[in-house]
Length: 305
Ligand SMILES: N#CCCn1cc(-c2nc(Nc3ccc(C4CCNCC4)cc3)nc3c2CCN3)cn1
Image 1 (cartoon, rainbow, N blue to C red):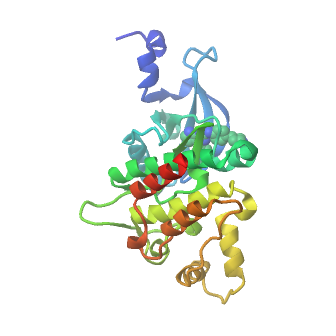
Image 2: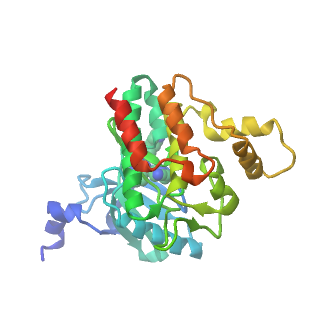
């Protein structure tokens, strides 16, 4: 086999690298917080001359045993996904000193959709939004073909690779649907992003491809709201709920207004056809909601017009 120095040089080694040595990892800056951990920008620089590649490294939150198991599941999940619209796994980095491990992924330079849209609002038009929506939809169709439910779809978990490419990230809550069932029931909801959740996920902790469809509708709403922070789903729902607080838990209030057919309002300037697409994703009963392939076709049709 090639000596270490030359191995580091060969392009194939660079690409299918799967174990990163901590001694060559150069910390650069924080990138964000995900489920169970934080993500940092690092340079993997085995030659020590700053020519190494930039990578995104997700570190596990310190010493919470249960999280290590979940973290290993997250690593196995992302390692099994090969799709242009899903953030790429690069490898793992073991730090024996702390008996912990980190997940190494491709670095997406433009960050999450939220920051990108807030910053680049003026030159992202509806066509570009529809391109992003169709890419997210294709990524979700792929996930569904692998029997995965993401369970944490939100603009904060969509990353921007370039002005014309976005990818789905953060598989910390992703579960595989058992072969003999249509849904996954979670035992420990944890701190759930209920404002992106379908009603059955809130009331029965049931998650399915159709609950991912509901969340995709909320991501469409964020997208066509340019991720404006004063129009984010949580704020819009709390404004509606706030008006009739009666001591019930927030999630029960949320389910009540959804039962009364209240839905997130159309974002300003949102094309009517796109808003109606969102509202089909928000069918109260899971079977009323479209599939990702139907949604994909509708988005492609809108792009042609
Ligand atoms: N998903 C999820 C939640 C967890 N999370 C994942 C990442 C992540 N970020 C990037 N890239 C990235 C992130 C931020 C910026 C800037 C934005 C302006 N302000 C300063 C920071 C720039 C580029 N690339 C990644 C990842 C994972 C794989 N590749 C960040 N948080």
